[in-house]
Image (cartoon, rainbow, N blue to C red; front, side, top):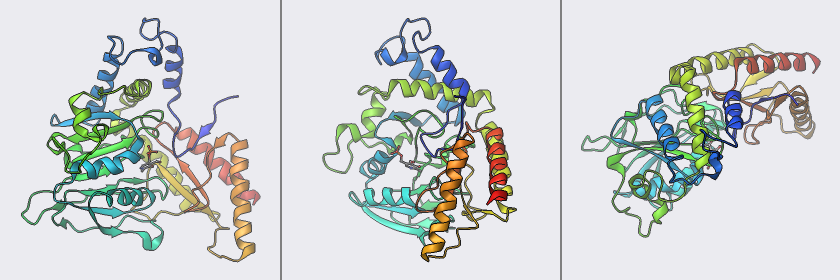
Amino acid sequence: MSRVYNFSAGPSALPEEVLKEAAEEMLDCNGTGQSVMEMSHRSKAYEPIIQETEALVRELLNVPENYKVLFLQGGASLQFAMVPMNLKKLGKAAYVNTGVWSKKAIAEAKKYLTVDVIATSEDKNFSYIPTIEPVVGDYDYLYYTMNNTIMGTKWAYIPEAKRPDGTPIPLVTDASSCILSEPLDISKFGIVFAGAQKNLAPAGVTLVIIREDLIPETPAVENTPTMLQYKTHSDNDSMFNTPPCYTIYMMGKVLKWIKKNGGAQGMAKRNQEKADLFYNYLDNSPFYHATAAVGSRSLMNIPFLTKYSTGATDEASVAKEKEINDKFVKAAAAAGLVNLKGHRLVGGMRASIYNAMSIEGVKALIAFMDKFAAEN
Ligand SMILES: Cc1ncc(COP(=O)(O)O)c(C=O)c1O
């Protein structure tokens, strides 16, 4: 079967040339006669692989010297707990609730400290990013989800926060679904973390970029497990235990592909072009419309509804809406455009167009949508 255009929200499409290169090296990586999957993580053969991946993260994101780059496990979801466990000092943190992933982070943080939800966009089903004034309070950190994978929204600005005495409050952000989709000023953050399975690599590793002074000697949360302490991983260069070796190797390859294609700037240009094309199509269509508010729209995840999603709750309307959505997803898959089913909280369809998605993929989707609209 020929390759499809994969619009999955995650794990997601990887650049084809990366997959080909990995396939070529599957049985013999760098003349070692071994697959990376078979190497000891402490071997001379593996060492340069993880080192190169870290160097590429630092280069592409312009990571300042006083930050650690960690490759952890447990997914982005484990960071929902590690952040409060390690950053707790004053015992209170500010969170912005912009949807499912923020809610999960809030629920987890509440186990370890007091959470102030300082803003939310729940009133409009999280279809926009709230505008917040500079935050002032005795907070250990301010947390937000930079790109909301399910709702298709993205922060267009970096919020500001300080303590009553004027000292800056560290910002923590979950950048799982937008990391390296455009440049990011890491120096504005205390922690940036991202599950890799959208823009960076296959599933299995979480990238954590943390300012060194935020890594506690001993976390204030009693009995924090060794594996959940940033210090454990920082002191051991992500090698305290066996890291996800193959996934880190794949991340290195994806990062080289990003570098070759213009780095973060190159990705921003590519992603803006794809998103402009798609939003422009949706905004001018009598059949489809985007759900995210202008000004808060994600470049990566684009949920959309058809004219049959009227909001009516009578049985016939709900059945018609479901019928059209199911028909769309099925027909799209048959046309080689897969994983377009929307999340149940938004409904309709969702096209995730991460770095690896080409402009040709977006054009193919639009051509299909046009035909589908004409027929329905
Ligand atoms: C923004 C965001 N945060 C966190 C997660 C959870 O990531 P993981 O499955 O790696 O725990 C996801 C997964 O889709 C996500 O999109």
